Image (cartoon, rainbow, N blue to C red):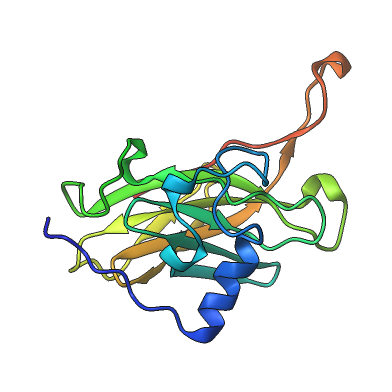
Length: 182
């Protein structure tokens, strides 16, 4: 695959990227204040694709090296954890064969209405070949979602139900497993 140029951010997109990474760049792990300068700063990242639904949004924000998922939330927001494209340093934006590369599937928290343990969404995102116009996600729940596909990237999300353990000693509820992409 040839090298891919990243799109320019509009002023609104730049603000969204800045809001996603309020300490100036992506997090190295779940500590939002721990950053590696080699991963870049807000200026290196572009809004690549964003999925909006009645509960909010999740964006795939990326640079030439890697990406973060941004799910805005006032309560316990998920930090913008950096992941290399292809999950291997130094990251290769165009380094995949075939029509689609699933770069991440994750569960994110969003602060909304209802019980706090049900405020999770499953997210799947990645890259597609230039001729791909549609990606449909078949979630493990049996639901189907059309992803947002734009500029060679895709993202989709769906509400996630929590799974309760039968053994009260197993700890708190956790979101169900993410689904699959096709």
